[in-house]
Length: 121
Image: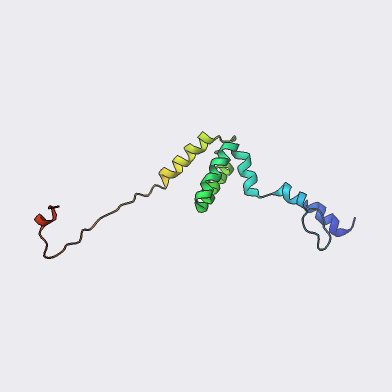
């Protein structure tokens, strides 16, 4: 074993030759770490609901995924969440980020018109 292979073995990474990229099997095993964590903490129906949210608003999906991963890392999620549990978490998130929308109307004042004339049809 040459020193490079020994260092690679100690680091836990296989030594590859020059120009060798990761094989398709390696990529499939590694995958996206975010997806791996989410597949461990979410049930299939919950993942489907999360993907539906992502199809509407990708930015909101990333925020929710980050919150779920953070909850899992803190130990707040101890088992696979079902869709109903995900709904309750989403409701809690919605309550925390609830922004009240206020719409105000300002009527234009038209000079020279009588308010009595406006009522006639």
